Image (tube, rainbow, N blue to C red; front, side):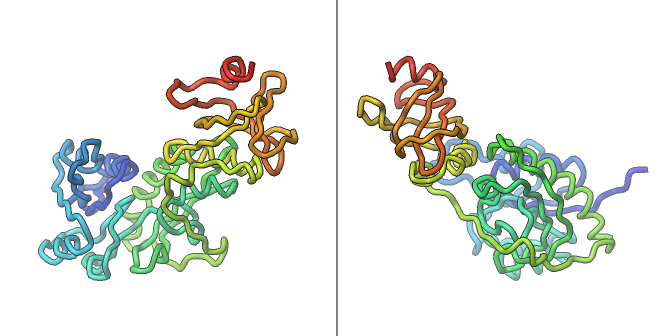
Length: 305
């Protein structure tokens, strides 16, 4: 006989949250969904809002911390705990303590590594071989709460941020369904975060982060291309053999053993190489402004001859 899982209140706003909510709704009774409202003038997708309507789930849309406090002051939820994934509004102590068992956050890193806003991108940028998911009880301090569970996930050498995100969402979904009921049943005692790995912090990216700096090593630049696949994307100014400068959007890259002056371009056996401070940066696919994405071979034939 299938065990009936306890009801939860779900907090989340972005596409990762929507993917989580869709899975959780198949397993938990969803007492309510709390998400940010559609921003004024925003005409694109609002993933959690749209999914809650599709699934006909009770919905609340506070737009900031003050309105979230007011919601929890005025509304009595029966769920013992909340679950938060990719929400974007900092929760007060009052909101946290509104739930007898607190609020469980699924954070996509092995805490205390990569606390903060963008742990997935920074895991790729760092070059680390693995990351994971941490189920943590929310506290007022940034990602410092006690842990319910952690599980590791390997980062393959060619993995991009969207690919790693998908793998972490799948891991998180499984962990939430497995460990939250056990926590609510008293089978799991929350424990402090470990002292290793050392504490590190991610941050929100800016458009400027996508500019490739040829004074960095090629291996670092290759990771930036994978990490910034969706946004802010990676662009760099190339110095062609003719001396002409051209800015391109780099969509796929590798590293190569060659020595060139930083930013200078050469083609060797059909390979498009750019000089860096260490080894060469090989561009595999790129986009010239106003043109479609092309291969390195097409670029060589069109611009280097």
